Image (cartoon, rainbow, N blue to C red):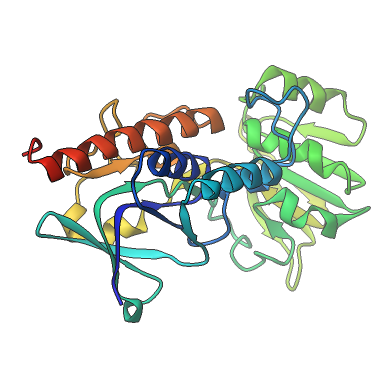
Length: 320
């Protein structure tokens, strides 16, 4: 059976939850669809130190929980563990098919795409084979499995550095492998990494392959300056080499094709509008964004504000 609503929000991270909060407070009947659990990448962050209003670090899960309670208090309807699969545009309405086609579409006047990112994979030998058997992309999910074991963290950005620090709560030794001779992440995290007694940094090196048959036994690393290959025995590999936009729905929806750039990120103007009337994008899935929680929230508010005015214009006839 079809669900009729004013606004559909696809994605339950900070951008989606903020969009939902602003939309329902503005009087729009709004539904939020999230394919997994609420929070997206934020829930995998152990400590959030730079979100305004929290003088002490707050866990990503706790921050998302507060956002959810705030939005639902105003009437946002949320459906989790349910993927938005494709969008069709009929008679100036968006028909979004969710979970499975037997449920019927969500029919809405406007849609906000806030589907976020997914971890980027390296594609090296052993990575796919040993995923879930020593290869991980989430420290908070899997860190406790490596208590008193030696592990490697691949990457040099903020995510890699913060997750490496978190993993020292469990592992006996953490190798941080970075392809350059200095970190890309914030200096405060880099300084903590270099000062930590459990962490050793391997500079100018890339992951060549992951070694193991049933579980991870080690890694082979290549020095990018000397081409030297070295093997390190360890029990786990955590890969944090960036993110890719979660935009499979665009590929499945010919009616909204062409809204993403070559990297897959959705192109909008400063008001979060795509080139398709009534379709907006917010958060990490949006091209050109500074990928921070506070920016995602700002995007969500902006998209909801403009979605409200779009819907109002359609109903009053002032929007053509």
